[in-house]
Amino acid sequence: MIGLVVVSHSRLLADGVAELAGQMAPDVTIAPSGGDGAGGLGTDFDAVTEAVSRADSGTGVVVLFDLGSARMVAEMAAEASAGDVRVVDAPLVEGAVAAAVAAQRGSDLDEVAAAATGDRAAPAGARGEASGGGSAGVLGDGSAGGSEDGSVGVPGGGPAGVSGGGSAETPGDRAAGIPGGGSAELSGGGSAELSGGGSPGAPAEHAVREEVELTNEVGLHARPAALVARSLTGLDARVRVRFGPGEADATSVLALMGLGAPGGARVEVVATGPDAAEAVRRLRDLAARDFDE
Image 1: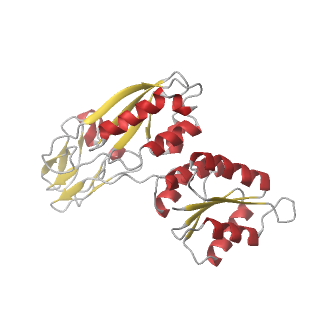
Image 2 (image 1 turned 90 degrees about the horizontal axis):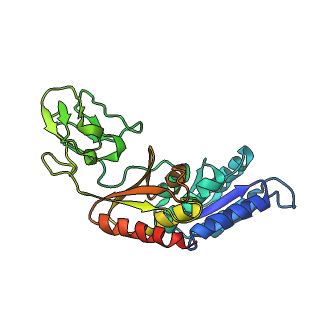
Image 3 (image 1 turned 180 degrees about the vertical axis):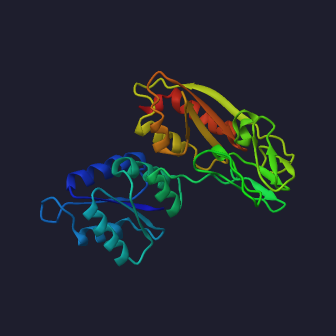
C-alpha cells in the first residue's frame, strides 16, 4: 500500500493533517514531519528522510508539503531515498485526504499522486477505440475535437468507437459522452457511429440511476466523501454523482466535496458497468445510514 508523508513548517500542522487524513484511511501509513527539529518553525532534512522511510512499505510514497522551502527539503529527501518517492504539489489538507483515500482503495503510486492534485485519469474502458487510422481520446476541457488523422475527443470520459475517420454521429445517448446526441466533426472523409460500448454499432451502455437524499447534517463534506470513494473499491463500475449543474467522479474525494451538496440535498447517482447496480446500492445504503455519523 502506498504511504504518505506530510511535510510542514509547523509540527502541529503536520500532525493535524496526518491525523485528519488517517481518519479517512485507517490502513494507510501517514508519517508527519513538521518543525525545525528544535521545537521551532521550519523543516528538517533528517526528520523528513526518516518520515519517508517510515511510510515506505516498498510500493512507493507520496509526499505533500506546505510552503516552498518544505518542497525543497522534501525533494532532497526523495532523492536520498532508495524507494519510489513522489513529491506532489497539491493543497496540503485536501490533497492529503484525497491521496489517503486513494491509497486505502489500493491505488498505485501514479493514481495516488493524481488523486492528491485532483487530476484523475479516465477509468479503464472510458476511452474509445478507433479503427481505420483514427484514434479516440478524452479532452480535458470536455470538448469534442477532430484532427486530420481521424481522431476524436469525447467529453466527460465517455466511450466511443470510431472507424473510417471522417464524421462521427452519436445515437443521442449521454453514454457516448456527447450531450444532446450531437456529432463530432472529423476531417478525412467517411463516417462512423459512436456508441456506449466503445466499438462501431455497439448498443449504448445501460446506466443505473437513482436519486439519493443526504439526510446527514452537513452533506458531502470530507468524511462522507471519503466513505463514498472507499465504498466503491473492487467494483467494475464508473460512478458519477450530480448535484445542480455539477458532476463528480464518485471515487474522487476532492470532486465530491467540490459539489457543495449540503445536508438535506438530493443528488443523482449514475453508474455504468457490470457492477453498476451494486455501486448505486452501496451509495444509497451509506446515505441511509447518514454516512455512519
